[in-house]
Image (tube, rainbow, N blue to C red):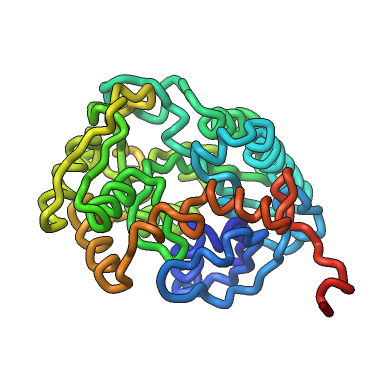
Length: 349
């Protein structure tokens, strides 16, 4: 298939795109690449790229594609909370516009990066795809609003699919340290502390970034009737953990580490357990490969290899919100998170 992947240079996209190439798909990427200096290990592939803001896509950009995989957006709660109106503009309005343009351009399939954050404050019962939404952050709200707006667009010519990923973890060339398993492992490696900012009681479903990529490929390659206007929780039902259980796994793997709680640690309103059995029943090609324990082992080996430091982990390079604020201070991004053009005269100085 000829596939457009928005956000292909992000945490998930940098893993998914090479896997699509391995499956012989014809892939083009679209990414504003504001995190271009944040590559952790290795290099990104040379996928043909439209270096463009997702808010600026026009119908001609979409001509001739068989599918759009839409990953682009503000990817976490700190970025989502930074300026909620931007989260609404980028994650919601631009996504809905992209879907409309894709339909007008005759793109048959539209795969949207939704999230289990849709369920928000849901308690400890297992949630299927029919569970009520209860998002508690601008990020989660934006994902819900896109699903509600795009699902009615489905018809015989336009087939949207909504992949609600569990909380991601694992190694990527564009690694994120704001994700719970990645974060706790990095704390343990760099400081010896497994630092919990909550009381450790909230439930989280977690899934390796490579398994998220496998879910997209399975949905992309599935018969249309299996995925048409369907939502899928992405992960394994057995991979739901309380945060303190993830901390215990990290402590068992990272030598000389110990669990510490922040002085103000308390309950987290984001608490949900997710039933992921439907995607396996519907898409037999989706076979997750990772567990939390293997993921911590992978990260620990990578941190040993690169010599991850606390400055790297907590600094402006790999912390998304800190990096964005740095780019704004340096005049490389404006307050609307758009790249600032450098005048020709300045380039000659």
